[in-house]
Image 1 (cartoon, helix red, strand yellow):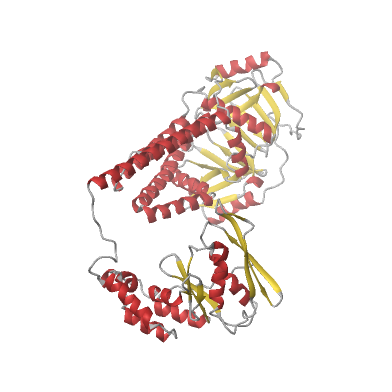
Image 2 (cartoon, rainbow, N blue to C red; image 1 turned 90 degrees about the vertical axis):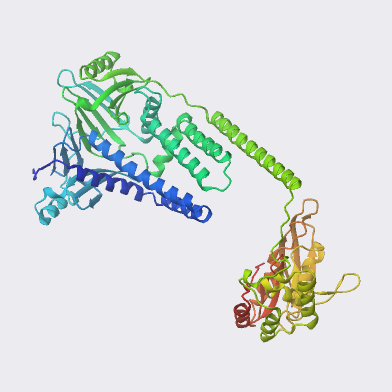
Amino acid sequence: MEQTKYTFHFTEKELREFSLRAVADVYCKRPSLWLILLILCAVDFLIVPVFSIVLLIFLLSAVAFDVVRTCRFLKKEHLLERRIMWVEDGMLKCSAFGYSEIPCSRITAIRKTRNILMLGYPQAKKRFAWYPMPLRVFENEQELEAFLNLIRNPANYAPFPDAMGRETQAMDPGQQTASSGEQPGTFRFSFFMEQEKWIWIYREAIGVINGGTLGFPRSQMLVTGIYAVIFIVGTLCWYLFTDAPSAWFPVILFVLLFSANLVKWKGNPEQGIRRRLKAGDVQNDIYGPWEIELMEDGIIERIGGGSKSFLPWEDFGWVVETEYLFFLFKRNRTQFIPIPKENMVSAGQAADMCALCGSKGLVYTPGKRAKYWPGWVLGIVIGILMLLVVLGAAGFVLYRNTRLIRESLENPVYETVPGWEEEFRPEDYPEYVPLDTQVKVLSSMGLEVPEETVESARSVMEEQRMRAYVEGYPYTWLLSGMGAPSYDENWNIDGYSQELFWFDFEGWDISTDYIEVLEGMLALAPGSPLDGIEDIREDTDKVDWEKGTGSVIVAFQLDGQTYSWAMDMQYDWIDGDILGVLNSILEQTDTQERFYVTGDNGQGALVFYRTPEWARQFGKATGLSMDKPVTKQ
């Protein structure tokens, strides 16, 4: 049953609104891309804020450019001309410069903007094609809903009829036919489209376009122009907003953009086509039977999925012949209709078809194949470019550093290190705490600060002008002195503090350092569940002493059970995981105390054996961060 036909012309405003919404829908289907770009903006903002602003402006400009480009494309595709749309027999039909129809069951996306109704069907996972209509063609909301109900609940519809009104049976994939039409001067070609065949056809079409058969590729011109804008804007920002600009940033940027351009135009596109098909960026809704009919007044195209289009000859500009295919290219130089030669009954039929196309204004031209580089050649060329950049940058850095050293020797500049100047200014140190106050705070937390430790700190402050390290960065100097082990005359440890333990991560003898660290920690926890630990040992069989790599196995006995951990070997540096070994044992007990660790404002650690509440109060009183490491076996 024939339904109401809606006749309309799009206005310029409605065209812009539809273009904006269609582009936005494409970008919304790529959240990962936007996430990456936002992360880049955030990183740039933290490093060079102006770069983040420039990048954001560039991205917004790219979106605006995409909207303008889409708008221009739709104008050329006659979207502003008179259009008629209606639903009939389960099919959404549109008559404009040509004619097209698609089963309503394929319409899976319905969008409404302020003035536009958009009916979309998926050509791929991330690609929709749209049938737009202005909402003003509907008298009221009830009429709009009635129209949408016809879309949502289509009537059963038989397979599309052929040009003479006969139903077309489903084609076997191996069945491919070609014939002259019922009318003189017409041709009908039928074949089955599968994924591999579509990839092959798509690759051949890209080769024709990139080979310059239809003139210099517009897409290549566009991409090259975008890369040129990126290069110019990036270089200008580098020189305008950096303190010491050098020529290496634009050189590296140019090489990266040139390499990207090289990969795009000299790399075989097949792998990219497969990747984009898998990602859902390339049309893949056309698998199944195809029928192409060339008639006196235009071309009828029926493709898999039941869609049908009539395209007037005025839409087409070229008939391109390659070794295995004919392509009828539209005037926009991107859209095409493929006709495999294997569907031609004879060379004479091919010649007659080309003659018909010529009589309709299409230019016959043999296809020029783009010459792609083998992947290994492309890899070598890009590798050489990158190597030259790296070598050049390394040479420049070496030259610059050599020049700076020479200039510093010829014109020495004497500077003072913060904290070593003769006049100490507390206001320069936000965390400044007087030494006496530090002693009071530590005492209030139950720690006994030895008088000799305090006097040693005063001596350092007065005699060595180290006041900044004692009072500018408070507590750590005193705590390090309080927690350091005592040594005998042969520099062997002969005692540990029972309040806190300090050690340097740069070890003295890695074959015994872990034992000493554990002994220093155990000295803090007498009467704890750890009292039974004995036979602490290190196994260095897996250590490569020359390379400073491998692992040290630290083990001990507790209640008849052996516990062991592997510590990473990094020359003479102690693995920080050792600090969580004993906590992993305590996690299996009911005791509240744990080992808490904080830094010493250098390369050492301060260790306490306390309750969580004490650690919290201590961190609040001193401003030191208290961590509770746990290292599982």
